Length: 434
Image (cartoon, rainbow, N blue to C red; front, side, top):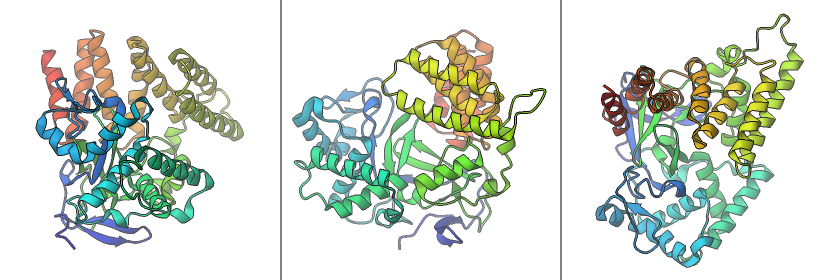
């Protein structure tokens, strides 16, 4: 076994299998450990804005001379990425417009290549090997099986000419399941999606709905920071999911995506459920079955909206949000998480349509309840203050803009670390206003 990660150790966590625990004290805001990506891929939509190799965001990137798709900071970055990019470069040149594998397929292709190129233990595997990832094949339902088959077919279709002897279907089924269960999405400070990656050591941490660490990214390196005091012997817990929703929803999501039933303190106490499910103050409170029916409706609308994003126009999407808010608002208070979910979607559509006033209206309603429902130092709260701050400044509401950006910085300094370039950028934005 390698030297491991200083200050922590791998151990058998009661009821959860392996996990990570602290062997020394960590203060809130302190870096517990950093982990480079074993393998990663930049999302296609961010190609012109970020370097394919180091994920730096800059304006003067230059593109790969062959495929004209990948962009780089400089020759060093291009050289460093070539072993991985070569695989896609050749395929993109051959297929042209028809080259469209999903991000997961692209990531798995890179993992296969990486395993060939560097069979020895990677710096990202100090405590957990990628080959040790759980696949949970025995728990897959038919829908997940179908998605897996589709991914395998796509891998063969787009890469069989470029990767010699692709592993057999059984090995691929396992690898896709491992990546789906242990992969991470890399996001920027506004929680926009930048890409996908695997970080084996980060995947060792078990889940809790009241986590004591947070994972943020510096380029393609994952950084794990304490968000509250951690004592020697404490298990280190990360959150695998969005923590906005009530216990029942979180449990469903964890069971569906990660195949376990959460028994954390938050799930047993359900301490935040009452506030999350707040109903309107009416002369006679709504009956339980009315509330249940409305929750059922909310879940259907959330799913319908997710699908509609692919084929409806922005104004049609906004209409779905507004109609559902009106309907739910008859029973739910504005601070109810299902209301907040649709407001957040509406805000996203307004931003896309450059309706800054509309976006601001929704954002102002969301930010306070977010601060109540999410744990301390939540990236969701930070990104909301950031969006609001930038909207205020764009609309020349300077005082409110600075106040919102300062609130974002307070959280980001804890979550990203004081020396992160995202923090420096926001501080610069504040300085420019003075």
